[in-house]
Length: 474
Image 1: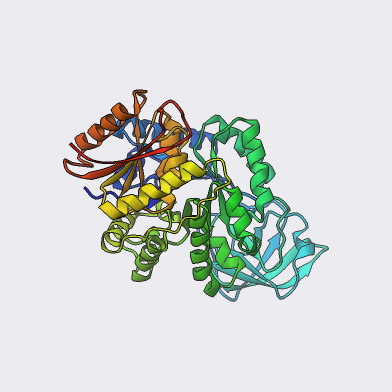
Image 2: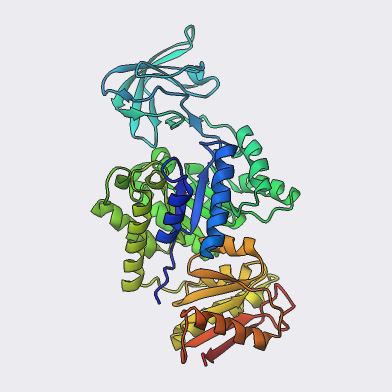
């Protein structure tokens, strides 16, 4: 049986908020649902979270939830429906709260008029709309811009400037408020927007530690400061997201492909999952099929070694949310079948506490390659061994068994890992026999297959993987 190793993250929005669509998307291949906290409210989120949990029980799945914080993002205010900005026409910008239209809009930023200068460009909605400042009036508290690139304008879209105007620190006042809600819901992953350095990540970790939360942090790389500090950010984070929307605005477009590849490489080196996001199948917002370039983009991200690929508007507001997932799954399957990801180099640090565990995990992957094993099976309490085994990109699937549902959901983002609930505490030998029996019943392995079991001995010594066993399935 072929199982996909690269995971799919799908954003939930108006097009995908009903339980029936969410369920269809899980059946089509979604591994993680993203809740974008730039939009929606707690009533909306409550319903979505409840539906995902119900679907997991109904389908016996471990679909994870990713809460994406808004961050220090500058946004336009409310806009009238069907507002279209026409190229070469003039438009005014104000800080005052108004309902915007094609003549005047609000940008939510204090001291905006003082900061921005004539000749500078303003990009809206990941650069789909571009304005150029022609004049400003401090007396009227307005900026007049010419529309360089027009298009339909919608409420709450993101704004980028040529000058750096964001506040210090990644967490906004809204983020801190949203965090209280997120932590009350025991969500598995939090995406931190506009990370600039490791301190941004550590600030969020302090809040999670204070609340005794096991939620993992994904740092979104979307500005030049983050690219320059990528090594330290990766080390401090639980995972990384290459957020190409804002990254493509803040940096020249021609630099993004190599930046993406480098971030994936560094994340792999540090055994941290990495997600590629934004514009993967963008044309499917309106159409039933992606472009050839988009299909190649998805394929190349798989070949680069990404853990997961993310759909944004395609599933949040697009006309074909389920089909977008299905197409992405097909591309991933064909790439993984035809050109498997090569095993990664792995440097084991002898002086760290888990050096024995790291060595066992890595060598289980080497052994799997040498004997063409069908599976690596691990018992895990914290998920650590599954993360580590995945990071070496073994040639076979990794099956993780644990009694912790939260860990099972968390691992659903990780490359090549599929989780199973298992709460028995037998001896190591009996547990190995038991896990193989479960996988055989599910037709994931069969008689005469080589499998590799990774565990702690004695079994109750949780968190200290110290045993690897090669065997043939009976």
